[in-house]
Image (cartoon, rainbow, N blue to C red; front, side, top):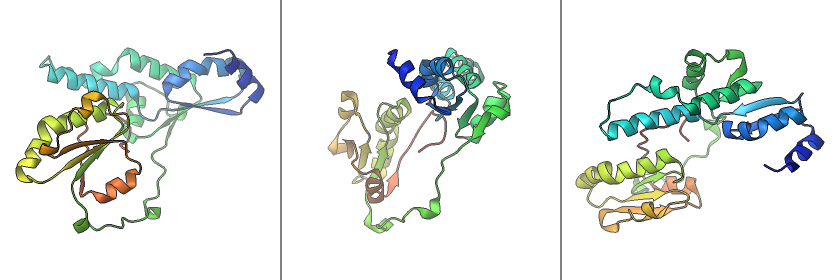
Length: 227
């Protein structure tokens, strides 16, 4: 929020500016327009934050046994207004899922010509196969940044509802929970007797996944495409 950004962007005079999520467009978009009026502004949504938030609100309401609200009611939130406003301020918006492409056009009436469907640019044929066959793997894992609310919600659901059912059938099974920034409330769930092991940060996510037999990702809300 320093004036030095204006000096920086004026000296740079970029042809194109890419905003990583709508919050960054809110913070810097007006300065880019002010200092570089001819620059093409592109918004990378990553996922629709307002959609994820709406789905989370529906889950919260059901947990509190409140009257179930339709997802469309939750979609028309202040966050949605902010996100759609950022889309209209930009020349082009990158959208990762085809569902979100349809939602933006049909529900929010965003013109198709300012949206670009850009899913994971991943060529599966170029990925190296695992060095470990299934028989040499062991245990379950779950992996995801703890600062992302859907991931933390999934860990709680695993602990409270899902893992006890699995352990009942597989008494010796272990679940290894990986993810950056585990808060104390997460590390307190660590319980070796129950085979519920909160490991925290994984140095190499690919290596961790190759060692396990099953990856559990019980996500009850979210948006975009799951990594």
